[in-house]
Image (spheres, rainbow, N blue to C red):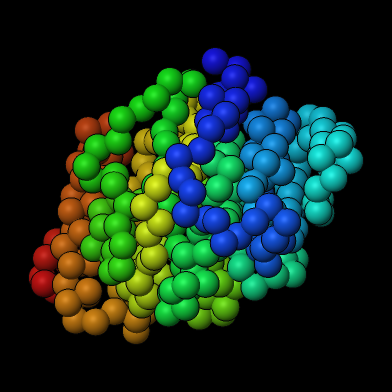
Length: 307
């Protein structure tokens, strides 16, 4: 299935009328941040999905993290053709965390939505989610359900992948429980929990959701409003598919050293920390990384003594 085909399948009709109070002429005070690196075609689809929103955003920020393809030329062309409120910034390759952080700092509006360049939005995504945040002013962060595709084919989600509402901290400990492209936040959240950790090559979203969910509830918009595309070798989840728990362990270790956690949260974090250290340590031993394996098994043992 081509990029344009998967885009057309998802956008040719809408399933919800609950956004009737937000018309297509209403510009939402949202900055949509899209980091990208050498994804000219996928980025075009992502931008078209933002351009096709039933309630338009105030600005789109593309952070080009050192692309060497024709990303800039495509962005210039689609900006003109679609009359998009798009701001393009190029930086030397520093990773997705640095790109997102740059987008946050350059954003001009109080609400921020994220879209990875290989994903795309349902046409009512921004309007429905913005409406949810406005009507639920106690929430600083919102996410939605998502549709999964792998090489253009629908992929069923397991029960453990179903997103939650409210206190989702325990869910976030086990897996990355929040889809990056489903997220919409009030920008003041970053003043409270910090930005994406630029030292992490992957699992930077897992780290941020931990720092957030231990302190704040998540508002779930219970519709699949984002399409997550998978199955390509250039994706971080593929590049770092061996050893991802190493980054998650580091995120939990940093959290345990903070003063954010309640005693109950601390105990369940230690339990998950111990579990992941055992899994990663035994995996290292299996592949002949004896010193590293023993290091993580010792960390698991120390966590057990602390429980």
